Amino acid sequence: MDEEKAVEYQVNLPVFEGPLDLLLHLVTKDRIDIHDIPIHLITDQYLDYLRKAREFNLELGSSFFAMASTLLLIKSRMLLPARRQEETDESEDPRQELARSLEEFKMMKEIKARIESLMEEERPYRAREPAVIRGGAFQGKISLIRLRAAFLSLYESIREEEGSLLPAEEVSLDEEIAGWEKHLSLYGKVNFMEYLKGQKTRLRLVVSFFALLELIRLGKARISDRAEGMVVEGVNL
Image (cartoon, rainbow, N blue to C red; front, side):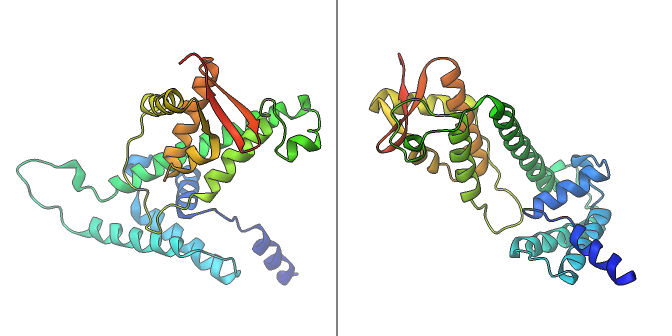
């Protein structure tokens, strides 16, 4: 009976898509303020998950262990006596970069979930797409399901650096809208996949995608299916 319980527990051990996903789960579960993370507690819980995952033969990428090293480094720095300075520098808090990465990851995860939710809500109103659409020869508008599939394929294809934290960057929605408008004004049309493949991080991809949706909402752009793939065309730019 004990062996059956052990097997059942093994199956139910949660699996996360990456180290930030695991950290966000731990922070959310314990209702912790991202900007005031008790690094000792989170590090212990994180390492405990890694031990259980290895015991149950769950595959863990190198990024999980890179994050473990980062957490241990932050924990060791938190144990050092505070350096006396004439002016307090908040950037000295070793948890600051971790908090920023978690915030950005949480935002991207929420946006991705929202897009999937919207597509799911639309499912009952969709008819089965004819074969010509699936084959890419359709000359009409793009369905939401195809748009979502294209976006998610790009999102999953981007692998953040093997380093444990997201690179610091600021991405402006207005700047991304201006980028789309510039390309559409110059060339008249832009290949959807090729343009978004130029976004090197998931954050930039998400913001650029939302910039395109905003242009479509404003009636300044439209997407259609062509022989060369999905094409974004400018409208009255």
